[in-house]
Length: 297
Image (tube, rainbow, N blue to C red):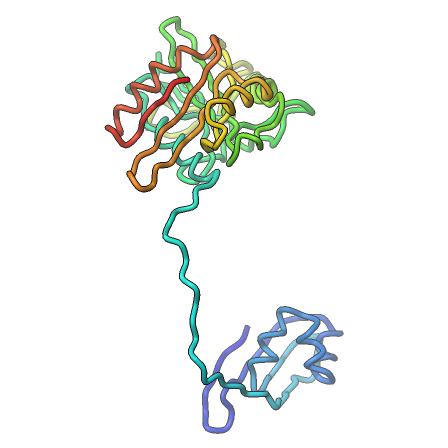
């Protein structure tokens, strides 16, 4: 801990307490400049103090040190280069876009199971049985599942008329080139193996959580599809095709941020296993009026 005290004779007094290391206390006593050059923690204490009082169980007795500092002043004009006002978008903005699109959409048959921050909760994964309004949650999620599975950044549940839930596991990256090859099968495997273990807790919607003690998971009817999300780039629609094939995904989202217009466009391409999502995306985008556009390829 350091305190700053101002007076007539001493401009800055640092009082330091702590166990520290014996070698550091010896250097402070005998060669403080050498300690400042070696240790980033001590550097500001030594370089910005006229006097130092240090006390530690490893440095008896308490040490007092007066220093001669080199005061420098600058008489010229200080100028800082201006920064660009154009926003720079990143993977976090991709995650935020997906979160805003899919969150709190249960009335539209969509449930956000897991969401990478900002805005979301990556601490656990939930699945909702909308027939009985019961939520099942897995906590303390593993980073991977065996040697093949990969934890998704987002998992979205779509309710089907056939009493089957469809889980969309999404890998999000800043650029399409960063989406891993064959990641689609690894995303699916992670979800499949996780759900086979049974949930940690469950609850009726908006009620308290309870530990899940049954041996099996009560909602066995589900299927998993995979998706990738990234920024729309100069390659345009060609990049959608490339990522879809290279990463073995069922659907890809490329977000185009139109900062000057205050709008965003999500470019989407799906394989036959995920084409049912296209109309659902149009429905969800209507909540944002003309600020969010779904462009199908």
